[in-house]
Image (cartoon, rainbow, N blue to C red; front, side, top):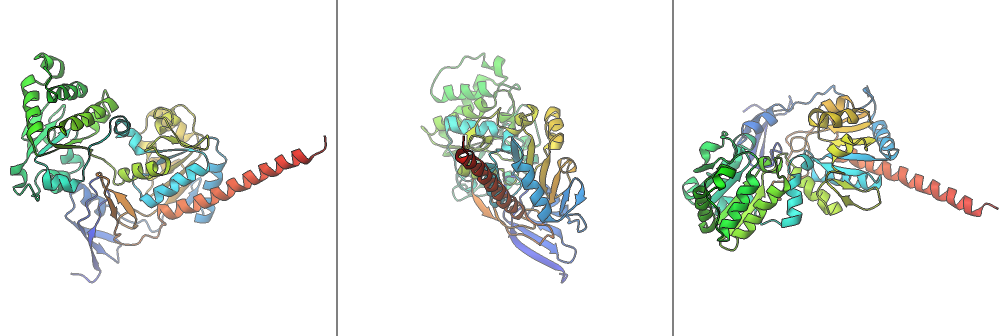
Length: 453
């Protein structure tokens, strides 16, 4: 092995919500590049191999001109403090430590904070509040689950190691035969690359997930369902009855659900119906339900924002206390409605994937961006910071999709600062500016009281 190659064992891949922490990275120390990522899936290998550092890229810019990090922090703080409705968005591809600083900044400036959850599993967050969640870790699924149901997702392409590491083929403590000891069910409106893994494939009509889930709830409770349900949903009564029996008679069942359930007709009603089904099944056996999360630390973002504010996303501090109202305080809405007048975007690129109306308004307001690379959003930024990549260059904490916290082991250092450092600097400065503003307002008020009539 070359003297320039360093091996980092048990590193963590932060590309997707699986957050696999068994990577063995071969790092070319001289080139500052990962040349091999053992155990990584095809997405993880691309994540590691495509990570290169542009040594000559500026660490901070204001209106496209290179400046010092200190000057950029000052300008970012001034921009946010002077706004009437500043918004913070992103957070799903950075550490929990950085996320905490972002919440603090938004609190101080009485702004609005939202994460990418609002455009993916936001409906699931609403369903959690209304229905509750029967949950477990992926380790429990690996060791105990003999019935695995995937609903509205395509893990073979979105989370390639979910099958092999956590839920389908791995041999567990009570599932010694691995796949042979499990029944795998896939529910989707079309056949995807995940379908060959399934023992049972159920293909409902698009937009009929809620009806099927509600019918399953009725069958679990012993109610009678009309045979014409197939005409309504595309799934026969016999198939639903068979699935019901399998669910009631398994030892440990799990419902994994994706954006095919949350971002289609029904949204949080769909998620709520699935969560309620899992609860119903616990009268007969042990059953859990888990959303399959996308970004590497989107689960961490939900946890941090919930811990700090009491709500998972779409939180507003304008009245001095947190308020939660999806549809009003979620970022697509604050931009589309023209309410936001400044934005702090962290590890996200809404300029490339938001609705046209939201993007147009985003381009019309001053933006502060923290990202590891140039994006459509950073190109339009008033203040742009180039930061290091979490998990590859930066340590910290992330949450796996099953809410298990994992500490990162970076492979090599970056010349650029991490998100936490930049956000800590902004937090300190906005705090100073807000204190100065309050002191000035207090002095003016005292002078008015003391002035003679």
